[in-house]
Length: 324
Image (tube, rainbow, N blue to C red):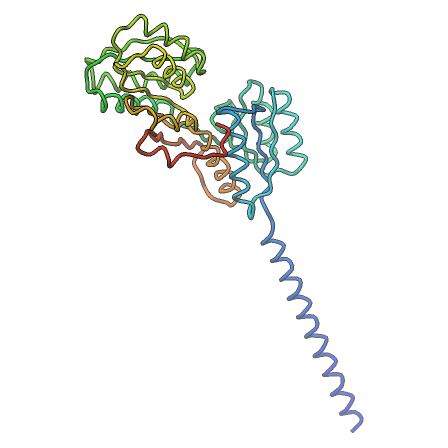
């Protein structure tokens, strides 16, 4: 009898130990799963230190997207004034443990540090800028298509004949070259009799005003203006108002500037257009970084198509918090 009781007690103790062990294992598994579920990707943002304009809006939009993805992303954002400062910040991000870096490297000299980061296993997605580094991803707008769309817009508004002033910006390199090529080639196809007069200017409203004031005195009839930049176009509009000219029916632009958007419905006699090369495209660069870290396969280069903005749809693109 005593022996039977002893055996029964041993069985009960053993059962309790097994149950306790199972409970402990289940708890450990649950804790690990919870930890995995709350893990976030560490993404660094490198952008130029500009307080206004298109470039400033890049940092704004990148940070905005990271905040929208706060359940997936932990981020650090740095802004810099030159390649040396950006290189130091890149090193800081590597020390922090960044798994991916979204960079807008506007200066020469970033090729080597970015290549080193990639070789250390960090995903690098460049915004806009193409550099000589193996394994770097890139998100950019379609400069050539901006010219294509500008040509179609002008022809749609004034027809296939008339005088168009093209404001190119040779100092901007491939940006102006691609936008010009898209415009000129398309015009040759769809409006070969269009008279196109080319002048050089800069991507600023001050230069747009000064240069176009001179252009107006040299040309008594202008039907449309192919401007490549919203800031330039704002200067062009001011020059037209100050000269009391009523012959110009279309002004294009480029970039996606909020101030320019708000001018669109105010100028009923002129069709004001902007072909988007928006700083908000950097959000796609952040999304690409997250997709790669999630194990998705993505194309090494993503080109964002152009969207035309004018008085018919400008409200869809307004953002009162945007610095550009």
